[in-house]
Image 1: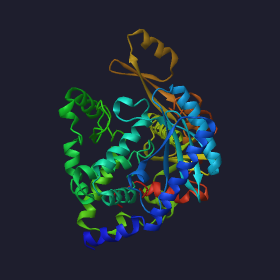
Image 2: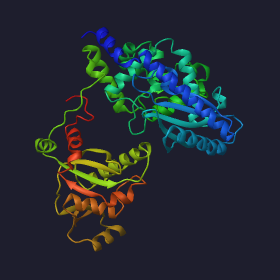
Image 3: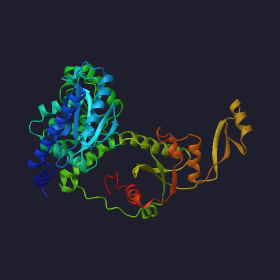
Image 4: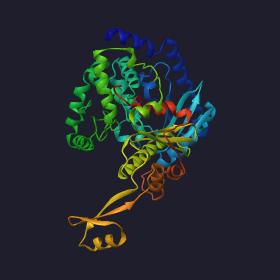
Length: 459
C-alpha cells in the first residue's frame, strides 16, 4: 500500500466519530459538575481542570481515560492540598462508583465511571505560568495550555504518531516502559509539522539531540545549557526542553530509553520504505513452544514465582526490574552466563522473574585468587585455605562451591548478595524456583521471552 492510503485507513480507525465526541463532551461535563458539587458540599475551594489527551483533543478513538485535576488556590498550604485533595477525590470516587488510592508525588484517586472509563482525580495548584508551579503535577495544566495554543489543527497527526508508537511498543513514559509520552509526541508533531515528517527525521532528531521548541537556549542560555549538559552526561537519547516551564530545567524526554528510541528509529525507516497497517495494528504474537526454543538454543530457563505486596505498577515494576538485574549481576559473578531476563505480574497477587542462563550446573570448585604472598593478607590467606599455590607473587586457592543453580541462588539470597527491590526482598527469598518449566499460564510469556519476540526488533 502507498503511504497516503495507509494513513487514510488508519485515520478512519483512530479519529473519534461525532457520536464518540458527543459522549466525551457529556462525560467531561458530568465529571466537572460532580467535582464542583462535592467541593461545595465539603466547603473546599478548588477549580476542576481537564488535562491530558481529552483536553487537547489528541485522544484515540475508544481511549477515554480522564485526567481531572483539582486545582487549589496558590496560597493553600501543601499539606492542605494533599489532605483536602484526597478527601475530595474520595468523595468524587464514591459518587462515580469504584475507586482506589494511588501514589505519585502525593496521593490521588483513581476511579471508574460509566462502563469502566478510568478517571484520575489529582490535587494540584491553580497555576497560570511557570512561576506558580509548586508540585510536579502542576505542570500538566501548563502543558495542556501550550499544546492547545500551538497544535494548529495537527491533532490527527498526533493521533497517527501515538498509534504508531503504540503499535511498535514504544509508547508510554512510565518508568517500567520508558517510551515516548503523549506530551512528547505532541511536541514532536508541533515542532516538525506532521506524523510523516517526524518519522522522516528519526535519524536527524537523534543527531540533533536537543529540541528547544520555545527557544530557551536563546532566552535563558545559562540555565538551559545546564539542563542540556546534565542530560547529555547521563546519556539520554534526546533532550527536549519543556516549552512552557521556566526555568528551562526539565527534559520532556528524560524517561525515554535508548531501547525505545532505537525501536522507533528502525521501525520509522521500515514503515517509510514499506508502509503497512501492521505498524499501527500489529497482529498478536502467535506464541510457540518454549521448550523447543530451549532445545534450539541449548540454554536453560530459571523462573522464580513469588507473592507481591499490594502496590501500583509504577512502584512494582521498577522493583521487579531492579531484582532481575540483581540476579543477572550476582549469577554472572558466580560464573553463570545470563543471556537475558524477563519480569512481570503473574495473576493478581504474584509476580515472576525469568532468567535465561547458559547452564544449570557448574564445577564443584572455584579458583579463588588471593593477595601477594609476602603481605600480611597473604599469610592470612595461606592459613585459611587448603590447596594453595603460587603464580608469580600471587597466591591462589581452590574453593569448594555449590554446583546447582538453585543452590547457588538460595545461597546468594541467604547471604544478601543479590540487589533486590526493597518491598520484594522477603517474598523473593521465599520464591518458588522452577528449572526449564513454567506453569501453563506463563508458557506463552516464556516463549516470547526466549524467542526474543517480546522485545525483538527483527525476527
